[in-house]
Image: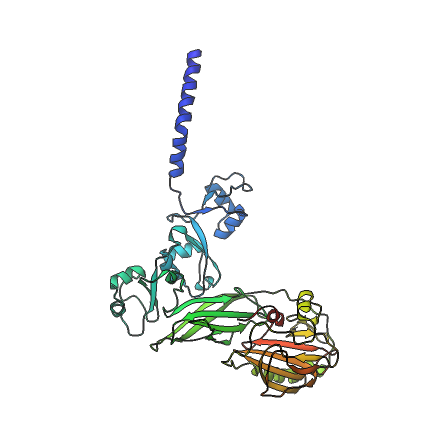
Length: 477
């Protein structure tokens, strides 16, 4: 009996000695696929949703018996991705990237990248979308970009850049030297540290493209900034509006301001950047960007003169008013944050929201109609005859009576930015006047479509009305 007990204790002692080594060997065995490291706040359901797999399959593959308890820092193998290796990390897709350019950037085959991100159509790689890649590929090599010109063979491009044509075939995952079309952006070995972050879908003469805010938002002004070499002409379009780019004051940076209509349905919309390179070659690139919703409230139903909501009256006047904002004056006339066009204290008004009877974007119903209208400006409170001041420097381009807007004024501030003032009792400027910030331009009244005296103040950017409150709180661009 004693001999048997001794043998059991000896075997147990030996097992305890070799267990760490066995366990280490088990941990050193490569996982069956790429792994995700559990982050703070993650749940198994969140991870399953992120990789579009079932929670049950994810739990079974990783021997998880209690889905409610996953350890911070644990490595989870993601099912359905056998053949791939590495730690999965998430990058944000910048503007200027395609599945092809991302594949070349991170050295991940297109098919694998599409599978990893469940990409079915190119529109899913919109600017700002999360992109999952193996961490081993997260540090791309420094490369320069070159657009293949019309009629230019790959060999000529290689010679012009002192590169081996077969090196270009390998770097760009081409099947041959002739399997590339004019206009395609190719990667060439070399380039500084900044080259790794530049947009792989745009010619090398263009650098980083930044969109703020991203996602773009209903009723908000967006700033689109792009780095460009001297001699590059840049334009573009978004939701039917032409983008106008102007020198920002920073060397090599061009800026366009564009509003998003307050009634735009949330979703994905193409933003196009196009232009002409210094050698005369044309380029055009389009990528989806996201437009997010803003929670605009509903005003109480309003009762107004029926003539002021008659389409026979409103449509021509709306077209006339909108046409005033179509040009984008190259001179930027305004500076800094806009002033409130009222004698009311600006800081108090912005902090308390007590100085306006209706805000921009509010959904509206007139005379029992459906809520198919929205409030195109900010209604600043003020009694009959209260003073109206210019919020920033600009040039008066309209001053006169209208049916819906009453006595109205519009000021051009440059770069496609305009402000409008409605329902005035008196207009104190004329077309062509150059006004300065704080200059008296009119008096509050009750003319046009109103229920009582007030100032209706609008801000237009790129031919679209945007929220004036934003311009009282931040400087654009």
